[in-house]
Length: 393
Picture 1 (tube, rainbow, N blue to C red):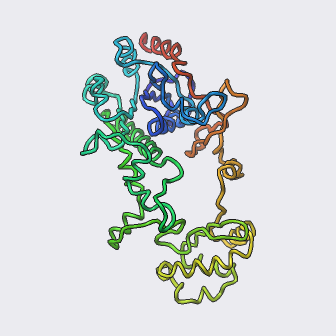
Picture 2: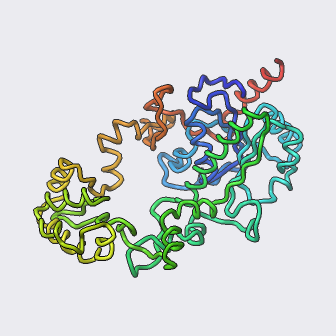
Picture 3: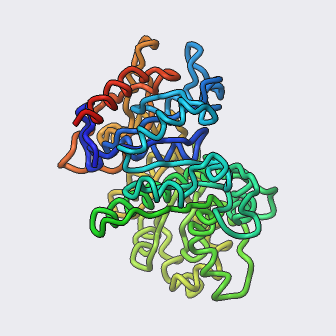
C-alpha cells in the first residue's frame, strides 16, 4: 500500500487508486473507494476532462452531477497519446494499488495498457474494467448506457404498473449497480493480493450486474416457468406487501408473515379478514391478492397516512409513507445517520448537499463535510511533488 499525503482515514487509507473513468459507473465506483479512505487520482483529458463536467444540473456554472460523483478526488489532465504524458502516467502507476477504467473493451490494449502489459510491468497493480457487456462474449465491444442495460437486463420488464408501458427505474441502477459491484471486486482483489502477493484483473459488466440483481424474478421463472411481469408496488411472493391509498396519500404496508397479518387486521378492526380462509396463509393471500388489496384499501382510505402509520408502528407492523426526495433528505433518521453531507466547494457560498457514505463503522470518522470535486488538472503540482518525494525514497 502507498502512503497518502492528505491524512485520509478509513479502511482503505494508504491505497492509491488511479481513475481513468468518466460519467457514472466508474466514477461512482471510485467515489465509494474515496469515501472508504482511498486516495483517488482522476486522470482526465486535457480538452475538457470528464464529460460529466458538462452534465446538469448546474450550480453557479458548476456541474452538481460531477460534484456529487467526484468529491474527494484529485485531478490530473493527461493525453495518453503523448509520450511525456504517458511517462507521467506510468510513474503514477508504479506507486498505485489500483487502476480503474470504463472504456470499451480493446481501448486499453490499443493504448498499450492492457492487462498483460500492465501486469508484466506493475505486478502489484490491480486492474478493474467496468464496461457495458464485459471483456468477453459476442457483445463485448458494443457500447452501453444505463437505459440500454436496464432494458436488456430484464429490470424494465418487471418495473411499473401491470399492463403499463416499459418503465425505467428512477435512478441509474444500471450504472450504480456496476459501480457497487466494481468496488466490491476491487476490495476483494486487494484482499487477495495482500494475502497471496498476486494482483488480479477485475472484469465487471453492467449487463451482468443487472442479471445479478433480478433476485426473485429468476427464482419465479425457474420455479413456475412463467415470465415475471410488472406488479406495481406489490411483492410477487408476499401479501400484503405493497402501497395502499389512504385519505391523504399512500402508505406502504409490509406484513411479511401470518403473525404480522393478524396484527394488521386487528389494528384495522377487520377481524373477518383474519378468519377468512382466503387469507389464512401467505400462499393463500398471494392467490387472492386482488381481493385482499381492495378490502384493505377500503379501510385505509378512511384515515390519513400519519394516523395509520402511528397505529401500525406501535403494533410492530412494518409500514411507511411514500416520501419524495425532499422529505427523505429532511427525515430525522436520515439526518441522524449522517446520510446528507456537505461538499465544501470554495466556489460555492455554502456546502453542497450530497448523499453520505452508507457504510458506517465506529472505527472510522464519518465527517459532516467532504472535500470538493477537483478542478480539471487542479492537483498537478501536488501530485508531481508527491511523486518526486516517493521516487527519492
